[in-house]
Image 1 (cartoon, rainbow, N blue to C red):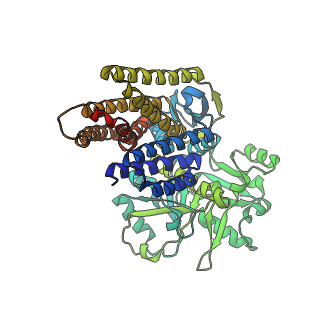
Image 2: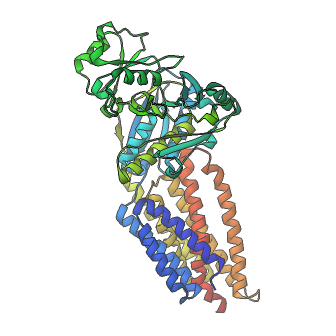
Image 3: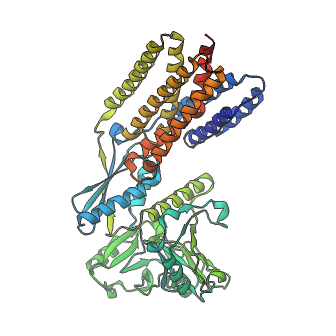
Length: 550
């Protein structure tokens, strides 16, 4: 009869393998392993099954490290520095607010190390590990946004980021999005809900233009080929009307000019900060002319300059998405939300580029980026991204090598001391074997993301807690005339369960603190505690339970 500890062990096996699947594609192996595991479970003793559960996870961990290697943080392997340049100097309090906002955005990456530091009063350096080019690109895109969210209906702001409750922002599975590839849902404050209800009242079937970092004081210039790249409208007037409706705002319109229909020499900037949004392929001579007339150029990639247009049920053409101006999506207002009654939940959704798996990956990245920006909030000062630079590891590979050697030496020293305490050689090998198994599993899982100093400290702490738990089990088994061996083991696991519960609850404030520097420590400590309770402690007990009979 398999008891509840074995069931908990299988749950952790699924949990650990799920994380490994993200990095090592071990899901298929896991399925076959569980099928074989289930088929043989009726023939094997519970003791053997506990050891098999641990061996299976160790095998997956070794396979993961062999296939994908391990990722180390900036302190160990160096990194890439991305400078965030402020348009104007910031006070000490404003700079602290901006650093905290960027840290919150970076916390979306979970175990991945991202460091954010202020440099003077007009620059913030963001550092990420160099070994992940995709991460660097994602962070650059994330940092390029100021984070100002606006939902605009008929030229009026119906919803803004100030009214969003950060704790309610989360991604939405594509299955619930009715055709969209990605989505992020959130709730709004009472004032936000009432303002939205008032603004959209009577606007049934109007598009809700959802913007992130909509340019202010700007014009956009594009050719007809660029303007018509994503739709089939031969009537330029209809297309131009759709563009202007999407860009209409009482607080400042963005004017669209078709390059072959306007005399650029007649264009004048409204102020010394007026921006001209143009494509990367626009002629250099035209760019120079716009700059000479006083415009600040915003050069956009060719694929981002073209709007995406669709025709709604009323026959009207609307702009669905326009990356050049920050338009994320344009859902149509259902008549039920335009009767004046406040609504407190909303979803931002949109389409992703690519096909197949590439489309799924892009959809996931889009959702995480929007979620991160909305959670972090808007930056109080306009920013721009400077040129990346490579930074050397402050500690380096040699320190990493010495850290790993020191970790193993400490593990062996602790194991020997425990063995000398009990003066039984048969305790030594199980303690070393179980502790090394825990070390391999934790290094594999955390190494699939990033192992920085905080994560390494958490691994060391988890190994120490593991040895402590093995001492508890050994002491309880060696107590004679205090019940059966089964009763003594249950007493030991009652103590261990209490210790693990306390450790996990102690780490939760650190995990949800939003402080990127200590998230790795919190997660590695929690994972180590769960691993020990559900897998390695039962396996150790199975190895040494014969002590009770000696």
